[in-house]
Image (cartoon, rainbow, N blue to C red):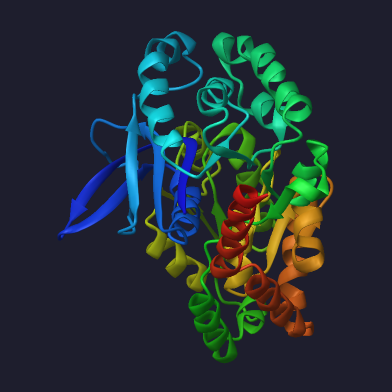
Length: 402
């Protein structure tokens, strides 16, 4: 069976030491890795994304499986520039529809302005399964900046309505139960899943390390406690709140904490400036976009993952943290509570003091309740990369034979 996957990201195929790799821009590399794991479970697959002229420092490379072909689509910088999008639509449709029609099942992600045109192009030719990762208009409103961003909201609201109401009969994969509820999906044609990048072998290795590492004792014994944030430095991730939380922790326990941020974005300079103005620049490190292997090393080097996003679906960074046995403190937003339950510590009030209280309580509980770490590992095993990619692949196959 042949699969086609389309989602809005920027990538290009590169060669490294004779191996085919896909270089993907920014944090889209995380979902690209999951999509490739699903694609590898088919006889053949094509992955369609906007093609970059050549990769730069924003791109991270991942192996391209032998059975998967990359189809590059005409590049446009952003949906915030609709005139640039319109200019490439004809060529995009010709190339994309050709690849989609040659497949048995097409896994297409939205809402997106191009999605109705792609659906029209493959109608009757290929079984379509929709995919949704983001929490609808809440996500778009949080990202809208400037006149062009706000001007696009009515169009996005229309697309969101069509996605919610007109296409309910199409099968859909949905990341997390909260988004399934948001889009009023029927259980009989919907798969609720996680985007997991934590492999079984990585969970096993983390469990072995945890057996000889007493993180709770380190947190309570006067040693430096390292906090990690993972995500884009963008308004919807609220990195300035994370900095406020760190400043509050520093006020309560001077010199006891260090903050690392893995990810890049438009607020990098603002966060760096704010840290410098508070005298925290030596204790706050902005790592930029990091390679997947380095991110996994970081999970083994830190004591807690802090997540301050104001809009969220089901953040894969939290699942990665659980797979490394780490305590997680996150804002009670989006689909986090429905997806993770009591495996993460949730903060209902978006104040630095409330987050700081929860961070300190979570670190203290590592000493009092070692069973919490075992529950985190158990949750991660249930939703490992192998488990989740197999579930999605099986759902896509079933859609064809219905």
